[in-house]
Image (spheres, rainbow, N blue to C red):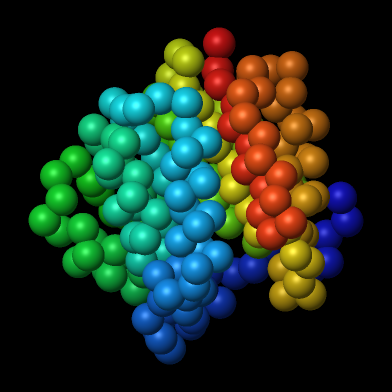
Length: 196
């Protein structure tokens, strides 16, 4: 995997996006995003997870959907504006905590029955992507699942793309975790692994 940027996309970039507008990625309004969310939830093996972690939660669109499948959910984002909006959105929902964290360095210790890494890997250079993928695998509970979801189209704005992120995840995880689910769509990829 060759990085297009010499560094990962800085947190300030995302803070600027959220500060300028609500829902800058159109997670609520685009049919693509709503459909991908439904397919993502369908890819989960269990009906209910005691504890879950969501990386890069933005303003909480996927977080809200995941709450239907999780007893306790910790949602993280690097943008303080996104964290504030997600917290406001989910304030009345029990079992969810939204926190500011810059990844991969501030990954919580776990263990988690489910870790969701959606639409974040291609913002990272390879060393940080590797650290995040391996870090996620290390905080899984016994039989815990790691769900990885990414948009497939290339962009000069990001260090990598979805296909490369999933290729690298396979290189790092296959043989270490059990690969359960693979969804290949022209617009997105979904992979799910399970710890022993």
